[in-house]
Amino acid sequence: MNTSCSSSVKMYSRPTDHRSKTKRRSSIGTSETKPKKNNTLVALIVDSGAYSIKAGLSTDVLPTIIPNCIMKAKSERKRLFIGNQIDDCRDCSGVYFLLPCERGYITKWDVQKPVWDFLFSRNVYSVNERPVIMTQPLFNFKSIQDCMDEIFFEEYEVKSMFRVNPTDLARLKYAKERQLTEDTPCVIVDTGFSFTHVIPYIGGNKYLRGIRRMNVGGKLLTNHLKDVISYRQYNVMEETFVINQVKEDTCYVAKDVKEELRLAAKPEPENSIVKNYVLPDFNNIRRGYVQDPNDLLQKEKEESCQILKLNNERFIVPEILFHPSDIGMKSMGIAEAVVKSISLCPKEHQENLARNIVLVGGNCKFPGFRERMYQELRSQLPHLWEVVVYQPDDPITYSWKGGEALLKIPDFDSYLVTKEEYEELGSSIIQQRFSTWMTDNADPKEEPRKAEQVYCYLDKLRGKSIFGKQEQGAEDSQVADDNRNSNAEGESVDSGIIDEVSGFDQTMLDNSEHLSERDSRLKKPALRDDKSRSEYMSLDSSESDDLMNSVDIFPFGTRSYL
Image (tube, rainbow, N blue to C red):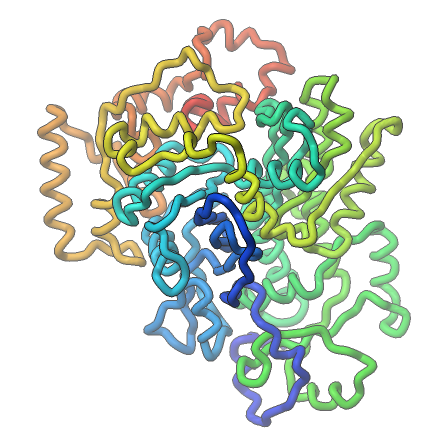
């Protein structure tokens, strides 16, 4: 009979002594002191991902890693755990996560800002003393970028700031390590918590027509592992924290799935895939571990512990990265996405792209991931090409380490945006300086659009609590501000147009256009260039399949996302 992992954790009263490996630190964060190294310009580099935030000074060898979420535990209902405060929790069974990101993009600012407040506090890092290098996901929405600028310049009062994609930092780090020239093409494969991106770089810039995205990441793998274990053994649907550790400690990528399945079907003495995982009780065992079958003494002590038996789940779950169709997703695999990306690039660069394939992101830490990627790419690319797949020792912090190479770019100070420039020019103007960094579709003749509607994100954020409830004092002020804005514009806004989507208003999708213009854009998508609709409809099949011309992916044109 299936039992819940959270309830069975507390039924053991006899203490047990375990080896030191049972007291390993949690993999989601550490705040140890880091050694220093010499550097010219000292800046605070913040790689804010959907699962974890990597932050540290450019003089640090390793960053501080904290979870990018707010957690609640059943054992301590009145307390919220922000970042690595979860290490202080006495019982992590049934931990409930408040995640600020959906599909890799920030949607819940009332969750993201407390995490940033904790990170930028005095006991972690001070944000207003040095320049800040902030990462953002690829094709980040303009409304999200505006809100980031407003929070950092007005709330945190940073002196200067620069936003960049983490894949840009990874490319700079890779070019510096291999001593490559600026024009050397390479492919960055970023597989993280929410999605997987394949980005080709040609001439030091992104080649947008070759970028591919998969909605497969570590979050999907953890949820699928919860489903499998809940169906076969225990009900662990509420144990995301524990099952994520199980995934990190036991799962691997198989070179030959069919052969592994044959081996997993054999009896246990002949089956080398079966592993027993000792679940934590959060009394003597803070983090689970794989049981050693040869240690008989330790095995006797673990008889009172709850054991999770894992067989083909160990390699079937990471196999989703290569074959999402196994769980019914209509998406190409990660290796197929790399081949497709290379084939969409100019022919004169395709062979060089195959020689420089870089793997970054948390999913790269699965054992056998690089070997499987090489095997898949070698079988699909021309046999005369040389295929080189590079995976760094720590793919999670590799993009953060690229911030050092960014600071050494000549005249990098000219890319930084100061607080005075933000107050004088506004977010819509300084966004050009961030957006044209390492992109190949910037049009120098295009004039910047003037912001016709002012929307203050901080005022909206201050009126919300962490759980999205309206505070009493902020409700009246919000109504007054709305009336004042409507009178200033000289027109009334229909309440049916503006609704709340994931904690912030629909107007954040495009705050530089009138609501009437935005409504017409939803009915008739705008193209990036000035082609008419008749010319757009007459595109051939190969060009209409282009990423930049895809109306489904870019309903407002690529200008809104860059």
